[in-house]
Length: 114
Length: 113
Image 1 (spheres, rainbow over the protein chains, first blue to last red):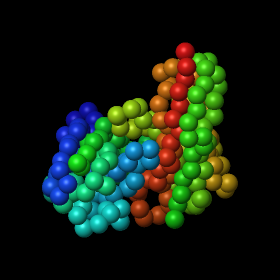
Image 2: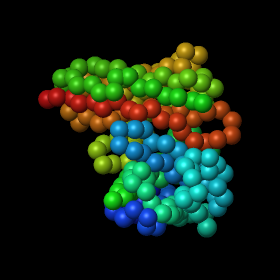
Image 3: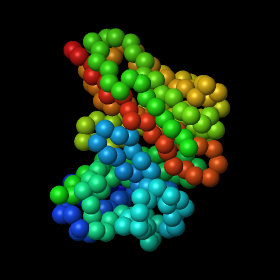
């Protein structure tokens, strides 16, 4: 596609529920990143994929968070037993491995846990 | 642990003014530094990327400089316009291994007509 697409754009869920957030990267981009941005803060790194594998998942806050990229393209961020503190904008970015121009970000999914 | 600080947190200027946004980072072992723009409710748009070996990058009315040894970068915006109103984020990528970016909290810029 022309850009990084994230769906849904907004998600409201009840505390304790399970949610999935989807990211469609730019076609051909092998690297994919998830970031989380809380209100008034800069984005914080969650996880980085190179192809199908998670090359760095050091930013995942706890074991309620999990992400997959089974075919090296679309990625899904999964959050179990959501808490109010998970409310944030979840941003996805992709890049070519050797691309020195930096990442291309999607518009994000705004998750609100009530 | 790398920390990125942006000063000021917010800035309001009249249209036409030249302005400077500041970014500092604690670990000088960076691979590159990038400036982004974020409009309300939107994702991030990359403005300028400076490799660690470079001193500055220019795009139109924007100029970004990098002083790696002192851990500082500035984003200079010439002849500001109301359309420049947005939050500007600075992010660094460290040398070796991880490809993650470490962001500052941003500077919210308002350019008044």
